[in-house]
Amino acid sequence: SGETLQLLSNVTLDSRLNINKSLTLDLADHTLTGGNNVKDYVIIAIGNGINVTLTNGTCTASYSSCSAIRASDGAHVEIVDAHVSFADMNALEARDGSSITLRGNTHIKMTGNMLSYGTIYIDNSALTIEDNSVVVEGGSGIILYGASNLNMKGGELRCNASSLATIGGKSAGSTATITGGSLRSDGGTAIYWSSGDSLTIGGDAAVEGLVALSLRSGTFTLQDNATLIGTGAGRVASPNVGSTPDDGSALRVDAQLYNGSPIVVNLEGGTLESKY
Image (tube, rainbow, N blue to C red; front, side, top):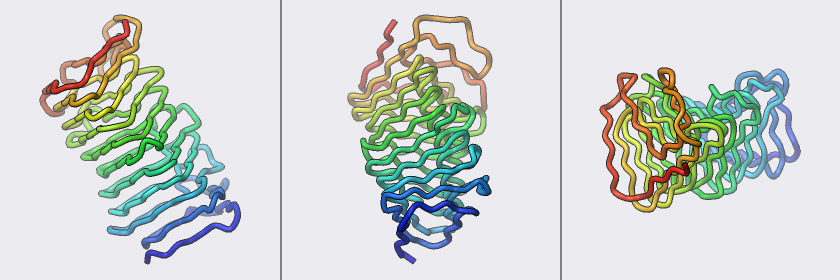
C-alpha cells in the first residue's frame, strides 16, 4: 500500500491493468498503451478507500472504443501532470461512490467526435478539477449521471458539444460548483442542466457557447465575477423535446421536461451577455 510503480520505457498492455491497492503510477515521461486486445479499460482502480495517482506521462489505447481509466467501488484516482488521450469512448469514468481529481498540467482529450459519450463520465461519484492548467477537450465534456458532484476550481473545458451536461430524468441529485476556469462549446450549449439539483457558478468562472446555460431543472446561482456569454446568431425555430435552440442566450430557462427539481434562479452577481 502506498508504493510507487515507475515505468522504465513505453509499455503496451495485452490486458487491462487492475489496481486494488493504493499506489502511485509514475509514467516517467513514457506512454502506457492499451493494446489491441484491451477493449474496455486500460486501468481500473477498484476498492473502497484506495488511492491511485497517475502522473508524468501519457495513457492511451489502440482500440478506438476503449476507455482509459475507471475508478470504481469507492476508489479515488488522482491524475497529475499527465496526458490521457482516447478516441470514441470516455477517457475517464468514476462509478459507484468513487472520485477523480485532476491537478497540474493535465490534458484529457477525446480525439473522436462521439457526442453521446462524455470525455469524463461521472456516475454517482465525484470529480474535482483543481488547477487552471488542466485542459479537457473533445466532442462533449463532463457528463454527470445519478447523484454526482462536480467541484471545478480552475481549468479549461473546450468541446464541440456541451462542456457539462446532466442526463434528462437520470441525474436527479447531481450538483456542480464552478468557481474558476472556463467552459466553452464551439458548436452547441456550453452547460445543459436538464435534471440536476443545484448548479452554482461564481468566482471568475467563464461559460461561453451558442447558448451558455440551458436550465431545465434545479437551483441555479450566479455569483461574484462569473460570466455567461451566448454566441449563437439569433433565434431559431422551437427545439424538439430535450434539445435547445442555438439562439444566443446567456441563460435560457425552459419548462421542465423531466422529473427534476423545481427551477429556481438566484442572480447574486456576475454578468449575462448575448453577442447578438
